[in-house]
Every structure is written in structure tokens, then in C-alpha cells.
Image (cartoon, rainbow, N blue to C red; front, side, top):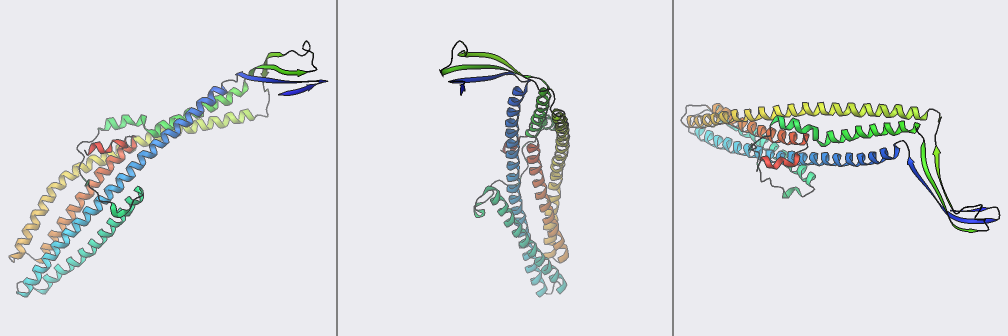
Amino acid sequence: GGKVVESGAEVGAELIWVVFSGGRRVAASRIAKGLLSVANEQYSATQDGVVVAVAEAYWGLALARELTDVRRSAHAQYGEHLRQARRLEEEGMINRAERLIAEVAYDQNAALLASAEGNQQSAERLLASLLDIDSLTITPITPLRIPHTIPSKDRLIALIATTPTINSLQHGAQIASLTLNAERSRYLPTISLIGHQQLWSSGLDKNIFPRTIVGVGLEWTLFDGLSREGAIARSKSALRSAQTTLQKADNDLHTAVERYYATLTTSLEEYQAQQTTLALAEELHRAQLRAFAEGMATSLDVVDATQRLCEVRLAQLATLYTIDTSLATLLMLVGKADELTTFFI
């Protein structure tokens, strides 16, 4: 900078170097790093959420397509039964009521098939929206299925401490603690090294105005209207809030992992039980078809057997969807959504 002194003038450079500020500079640096870490962890959590959303939408489409196939298969079975009922009515082997039962079942299933096709189109649009692609190009190649293995509950619980959610909140609590320390340090003085170097002068006596000056500066605020006390109180409150949020998130994650793991294991057991139920329903359906053709069963018996078989197949598909989505959610909760495919390959 330059300045004029009496009848002379000079151009010089001044340097002020803060050597002690009560820890505020260190705290500011650490806070900046903490904010960067929070942003990175939140990005990871967002990525995990996107993976699960896409996986659920993909399996939702796979489920919708398989449900439609089941309804279409049932529709064909009801149609065959209706044709057989009409033939038997013409031959005088069954009455009109038997044929009407078959016809009503056929019409009702036609409505259910149309509804399933509509749901499939909605599932296609949802997945296409998430992937930002043309829905006509989506054809799931991986059906709903049982994962070849599942992670242990102990491993999942152990991973909670390193999840992006917990890491982000821990960094937030650290930032709140650093902010509190920085506010407390405002009670301490600021000490600086001060230097001045004369670069050019005119009309100044060098013996009176030296070219180089070095010194130490001290700034210490003794009273500022209680603003420091207010800032410290707000920082303490922010720290308590951050610590409470961290503890609550940890508890919520433990509860969620326990709940989804129970859903996963229960659904796996249910699927195995449904395998036996499906075999029984298929056998009963075949038996009723044979019996009806031989005049040993009514049309209602065939309709009930066909409906029961359809319901078991639909329930089994719903169970598979629950298994796959529960596993995906568990991995997201512990920050391992990117490992999802390894449980199906």
C-alpha cells in the first residue's frame, strides 16, 4: 500500500500473519473437511437408494408380467372348461346352471386379466421413468427367484456402524462440536505477527522512517454485548441435537434391520411351504378336470380348483417379490446396495 507522511510519500507492503486465534483457524479447516465428508456420505446414501428403487421397480415389472401370465393361463383353462361345459350341455350330460357357472368364471377372469395387463403397463412406465428410457424397450430377463444365499443378521448389524447414514451424522456431530469449540475460543486473544517493508519512498528521512518494521499485534475482546454467550448456547443446543439424531438413527437402523430380516426369513420359509401347497393344488386341479369329463364332478368343483391353483401361484409370486425386495432393502440399510447382484449370480 502507499501513504503520504508530511511532505514525503512512500510505497510499501504490509503483512499480518495470525499465529494464534484460540483454535478458530484449525476448527474452520476441520469443519470444511467435515462438510465435504457429509456431502460424500449423503451422495453414497442417495446412490444406494437409487439402486434399491430401480431394483424394486424392475422386480415389480417382473412380478406384473408373471402375474399376467398366471391370469392368462387361468383364462385359457377357464375357456377350455367353458367349451367342455357347452359340449356336455348340448349332449344333455349337465344342466344349464353348470354351463353358466363356467361362463361366469370365464368372464370374471377376463376382467382380472385385463386388470393385470394394466398393472403391467404401469410397472413398465415406472421403470422406464426411473431409467429414463422408452418403456417399449424394457424386457426383464431375470425373473423373481430365491437368492442363492443371504447375509447373516450379525454381519448386517455389524455394518450399521459404517453406513453412509451413520457416518454422515457422526460427521455432523463432529462439526457441531468443532463449532462449539470455535465459539468458546472467542474468549481468547488473537495474536499476530506484523511486518512492513518500504518499497519506495520520496522525501522521507530513512533514519526517522525505517524501511523494515516487524512487530507483534494483540487483539482481545473483553465485552461484546453477550453475543459470545448466545453463540455458545446455540452451539451447545446444535451439538445435543446432532448427538440425539445420531443415536435415534442408530436405533432406527437396528430396528429396521431386525424387521426386514425377520420378513426375509419368514418369507423364505413361507415359500417352501407354498411349494407343497402348489403341488397339491395342481394335482387337485387335474383330478377335478378328469372327474368333470367323466361326470363325477360339477362345474363349480372345476372352477374352485382352477381358482385355488391360480391363487397359490399368485401368492408364491408375491412371496418371491417380498424376498427379493426385503434383501435389497436390507443391503441399502447397511450401505451395501451395490452387492445386491452377487446374491443372484
